[in-house]
Each structure stands twice: as C-alpha cells, then as structure tokens.
Length: 372
Image (cartoon, rainbow, N blue to C red; front, side):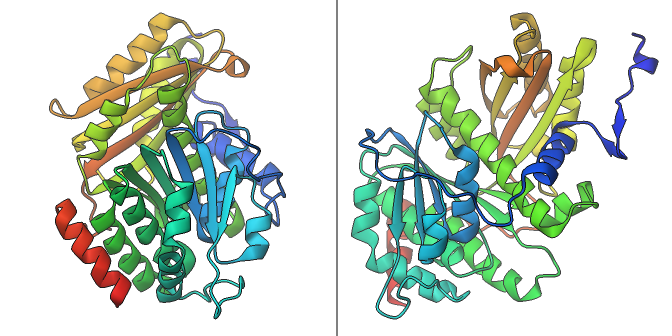
C-alpha cells in the first residue's frame, strides 16, 4: 500500500496509536470500583524486583499488573477498604490509633507518620529487593506522605529506587501544593522520579472523562514498569541488566514515560515517531541523560524489525544519552510493535527538581522529615 494511502485509520475521531489503544481500553474496562483480587502471600518467593503501590491511586495501579511473574507486587495504604480490593502478592495496612484504617484524610503529614510507625514492617516486606518501583498519586495523603518514607526504607537496605507518580490536574488546586511537597521529598529519597502529568494527558486526549484519565495513567505506568521488570527477570529476545537500570536511574532527578506503536509495512518508523509524540510530561525526552527502552513485538514482527526499532530509538536520543534496550515477544499482538521509553535526567518547565544529594544527606533529611 502506498505511503499516502497508508495514513492512520481514524476511529471515532481518535487517532489509532499507542495512547488511543489505551484510551479505548479504559473506556471499555474502567471500573467504578477496583476489582477485587485474591492477593495474599501465596507462599511465593520474594523476587529481586518489587513494585509497591502506595495510597489509593498507587494501589489501584497494581490491578493492571495482575499475574505479573517478574516482580512482587506490594500494596500499601492507610485505607483498609481500598486495600482489600487490590490484587497484590502482599499488602500492608498503615494504621495507627488515630487513623484506625480509615485513610489519611488527605493529609500528607498523617500519611508520613503512619509510614514511619510501620517502617519495620515495610522493611520486612522489602527484604531481598534490589530494585524497587514505587507508584503513587500525588496531592492526597497516603501516596504523597508515605511514598518518600518507603523510598528511604528501601535505600537504607541498599535497593535502587524509582518512583512513578501522577501529578494532579490544574483544576485540583488544593492538591497541587501537596503534590509539589511530595515531589520534593521523593527527589531527595529516590534515584529517579518518573512524573506523568495529568494535564499533559488531558491535552493529548481531551475527550477523556476524569475517571478514564486516571485509568489510562495507571495503565501506562503498569505497561512501563512491567516491560522493564520482564526484560530484566524473564527470558526475553533482548534482556536489560540490573547494572543498566542502576546506571540510568543514577542519572537522577526527573524522568517520564513515552509510549508508541506501529503495525504494517511502516511499523518501525511509526512506532518510533509515535513514542516521541506521546510523552506524558512537557519535556524534551530526546535530551535525556539516560533511557530505558522496551519493545514488545507480535508474532509476525521479525528480529530485523526489532533491531531497526532499537537502532532508530538510539538515534533519536542525544549522542551522550545512556540507553538500555530490552525486547520480548507477545504473540497476541501479531503484526503490531509497541515501544515504551522511560527517559531519565530530563528537565521540564512544569516541574522544579530538587538538587541531587548524597546518601548521607538523604539520611539526614529523612530524620528531619520523621521528626517534623
């Protein structure tokens, strides 16, 4: 088919690309309440990678990781009702005499205090973890306040810590100062912080309803974290090593996610272009200090096409960008190729990044936060 005739199909006025597919899924599957899952311990051996959902938004994101084999999922919340509805390998209720499992009431200070009081339980759950992904929503109580404490606990145990957080809509004015406070604390306690800006998502897909936007953001985070985790832990076409992840996370500061896809004769070109179009933060990803790129290929996608996609992604980033590429095959995608990129060490006019500090300074800051 000639290139001029091959232009993307329009479906209900939405361009069919990586983001549109996620949007369509959200419209079909977005639940009114999180679906209940078995959760529990299950006697499973704790892997070296843990994905911790913190607070309501963070825990809800874990439901998109149901059945994940490459990482342990850990749900942490002050709200017992939400916690019961989350499908995770392990759960921790951050309850104190004052909260009694009823939530943090939108107060980051309460969320932080609850996490500090349960810090030993958190460390026990994280035992053996070498790479910790934390996912949370910013602007509320538990995710904003508890996530930095959990990050500090993991760092004290020698883990590499990457947070993936959702930044609130501009109309949620009361949540923005809290979100900025939480980001500052996370920058001081994590190796890198991935930010997905809901305002950016709203610009890209303005027809989304509010609950659908949350579901889409959760799906994107789940896709990125699962892709990296699978590429490290499971047999893949191209694996990513721990050292690669540590090095790129060590770029520090701000990171974000970009997603793309392609199919047909121009799948490689389309997937790469789509990826840099669908960046979930106002930022120049191509100038990133480091990037983790994961390619998911359908059964009909050749190894040559996968190699071409990896090479094109490398060329799109700046020459000095440290890049690690992983790839695996997912038969159900058939002729489709998905690309997910986590770009680290970036700058954005939307986000003020706290300066990187040493581990000694981080320990001092953690003590100050705990005693405040």
